[in-house]
Figure (cartoon, rainbow, N blue to C red):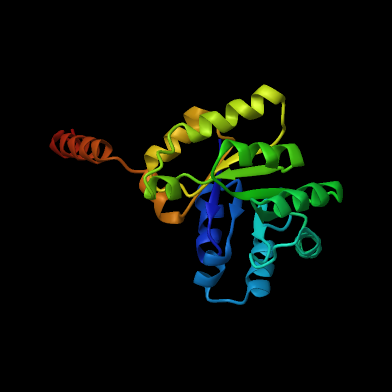
Length: 220
């Protein structure tokens, strides 16, 4: 399963590329806002960080665009910024039409805000390179997400669709593990979630036990 960072902060991205060797990046309007930079500025800086690699960067079109023609026009413009860019398009009737048109023009698309298997099916059928089922948002509102990734993966496998699943809105290590076991191709999460996933209280306890034993062992 590939590790994608969910961020638009260049300092976080640089560190994740260096220390974690991340496989890709996802951004959204909230992350761009959190970066404190204009949209075009930050995506240009991000593109530079990934220059010379084949790692995908998901960049979202203006979420106010609701007609497929407008989504396609902006998507093609954004895709021209960098060969790494994958265009994020929200799930909707017009959005899936835009996915189909962008794909026909050779633009890779990440269908985002996916909350049902039916939406994932529409995205795969339209040719989306990536499908982003959101987990944390479902759990937050009382809709259990544990079976969501397995169901989307079963649908893709049943019909031979080539779309890759990006488990999105992942909030903790447990959801990372569940996504991996369910067959998600990629997982994307914020820096803090991945930092926590490296640690475990039992590991900390074991390190302390071994350190104490090391210190109590005679040197000669």
